[in-house]
Length: 164
Ligand code: RP5
Image 1 (spheres, rainbow, N blue to C red):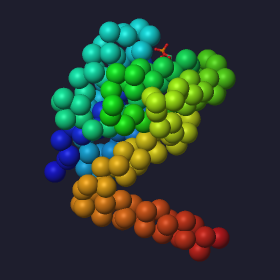
Image 2 (image 1 turned 135 degrees about the vertical axis):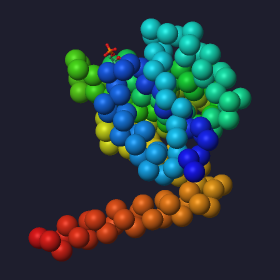
Image 3 (image 1 turned 90 degrees about the vertical axis):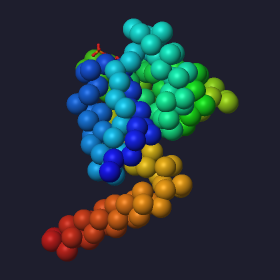
Image 4 (image 1 turned 120 degrees about the horizontal axis):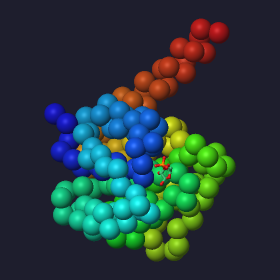
């Protein structure tokens, strides 16, 4: 059975969904059904504030926040919630290929951390895996799934190597 809404995936725009689908799909692979929201730190700051401030009370344990350009969504979540916040910087259609979003996400002031992943799809997938790693600390079944996932990644590389 899917874990009950322990992880939230928020993104700044519906234009982020094609990339963040990789995050949502990876969470689902581990049996985690995330809360998914489109919330903008700049266009809907009141909703971002309300969501972050209330997330813990709804049972959410981890917030994954993805945005492009001047990517303040993860920081806005971290400003209003003490939950672990995982940031995913995205490359927008215009701009310097996500470097803008990376710096906006990662350069948090001391005391208000955001765990920033890589830019784009790699970061989206890793955000899901990182969330699973946190939850697996107190969930043996999830820890076993994580072990299987690592084994299967290893096996894929070995098979590619053998096929050369
Ligand atoms: C950010 O601005 C969003 O996260 C998105 O990556 C970028 C562009 O947004 P749209 O103009 O496509 O809505 O806030």
